[in-house]
Length: 521
Ligand code: KIV
Ligand code: ZN
Image (cartoon, rainbow, N blue to C red; front, side, top):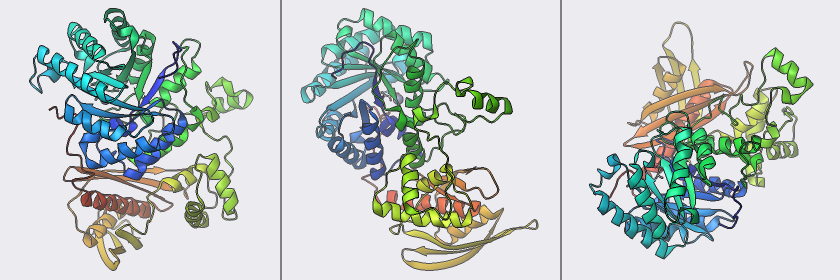
């Protein structure tokens, strides 16, 4: 770390590690590289790129992200054993600025898992941090479940880790149990009472189980923490992690009472939020702070009147501060390729010529069906599961008969591994009939865990975006698509998920996680 300013807060993004651990949020290799590139460009100080020992896929992703990073420190996670730490180093050593993050659960409940007594665990911490530090001069150590660890033992372990060479001590609220006053107090007291604490950086890592992750992280900064661990959109297991966009914008908007600085280019927030929502398959709730669809919308008459007179009446930040383009120039079927390129660039998508060619074809198809194409339509178009020719399953034709007298009937033609096949199926509603038809043509045991439909814009010709989540033998995948026809969008999203499942099936032993950070060794 170079910036010694007392008020500089480092942003540590763990979307690709803690966020991606969320069941169903698994990203492909290419998606991880893309997200890491965007985080790097946005000014994230440290990117936790993955957990290298977990799988060949994680190892490869962390290695490549390390090679491609321009500015950010690249960090990998390792449990408290030499094998994990060595594997982590093998992956991050390619980075210009590598970091090893090693951890062990220190609370009574977590100590019971590896069955270590306090002294044995203390020795393990000393040995593993020393080992990590012999490999890398940037080492982060975390006492997992710190907020439920006995005070004396927490101080003792933090001191051991500092003495063994840790340069950052992260204090995780693993189960989202703490509250702001306690969060601030914990860091303040650690800095005051642990020898050597003023030589290193304290980090805060909060989970959102009680909805306090943002408040807890900011309170920890008030207590003296200078690194916030967070994820885009608050992605993460259970209720998620601290949301990057919330802490960064809170410090920016309320600099009067939180005079802290980050290096984040906030105008890139919306684009990253959309990309992460799309690749993780976790849509952003409409009323989510900063990045929700309604975060800057002013629907009621009184609000609109106030807004027209003075935007500050109801707005504490400007939409453009987070990368929402102000203009909503409507596109239509006469809009050309240059206009589409410029519009997409305003929305944060800079496309290569071949990508633009493909998107332009899909844009024209949409504009033929929908008179006015809004920003949100284009975003849905960019994020919908594409009909990539390399996909093993493709929909060729679908028609569905609906009516009050059911059952609904779907007639479907698909190309499966190059072979065209057709079927008919009935079901309880048009989507059920369509999914049954897909199953007729491609029998599988995967269970549908989630089916979600959203209208992108208003009006009866609005596009629907559909997300589905499926599970097979512990592998969870998501699929998405958008179309003005909800049933077509549903069919495409379902087939998108199946295609991803086929890729994951083929990668058993490489992409499939063999180890979770919860498997304590
Ligand atoms: O929540 C947690 O405790 C973690 C650790 C691995 C840092 O994610
Ligand atoms: Zn965590």
